[in-house]
Length: 101
Image 1 (cartoon, rainbow, N blue to C red):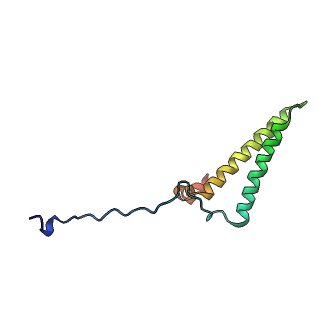
Image 2: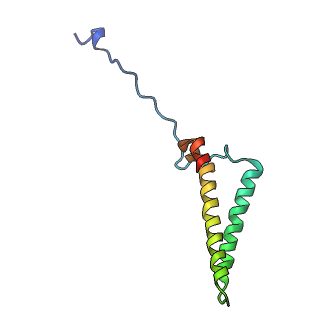
Image 3: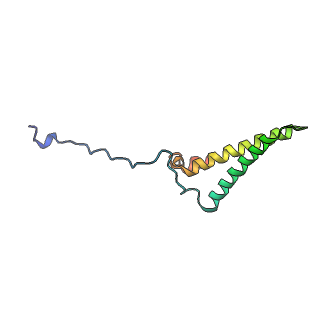
């Protein structure tokens, strides 16, 4: 009875998923001048954070603290945008969710 066609396997073998690097980098969603501008923005915001940290004394520090908050926030947000657009996270989330984000 073991050779009977009734006992053949009825399921297909599981298809192997294509191998990807963890955090696979892709530049499909951010190309050309947009990528260059985003990288330049990230570098400038990092330079602003570093320059702000170099100030040792100030007479009225409230403006400096505000600048620190803005430059640090700009750096972190531009890193987040680069991460989303240049990795597979963009495809995982979906275009509509990325646009809402």
